[in-house]
Length: 147
Image (cartoon, rainbow, N blue to C red):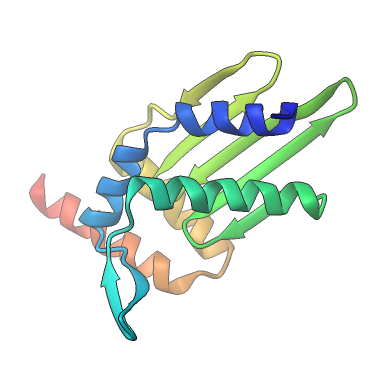
């Protein structure tokens, strides 16, 4: 296994996939699957979520991209001359993970859920992702009603 694959596997192991799956469930973010010639909508499994992320980073590497926004992921990758992998920041709509090769650690955002939602709403609006912005707005309204 090459250095790139090892690093990606290390990043994948460090992300809280159960939490990401629970966000899919909570916000009703469903994937469509073909099953016996019928389309079925369901929450993706942890394995499917990991595969999606792995393919996304591989796509970035193959196409020499330093930024990509795809589905629920926003990934920033700063490649540095002295480090083959560099720094990776993966944002899964409501969670933020950073990986720097020199630190070899993952830092999960410790903002409150409301602050996460506010930040994600800003990102969605900046990216003109109005459907997702509406979902976030509705979640923020629900949280305000509970207070």
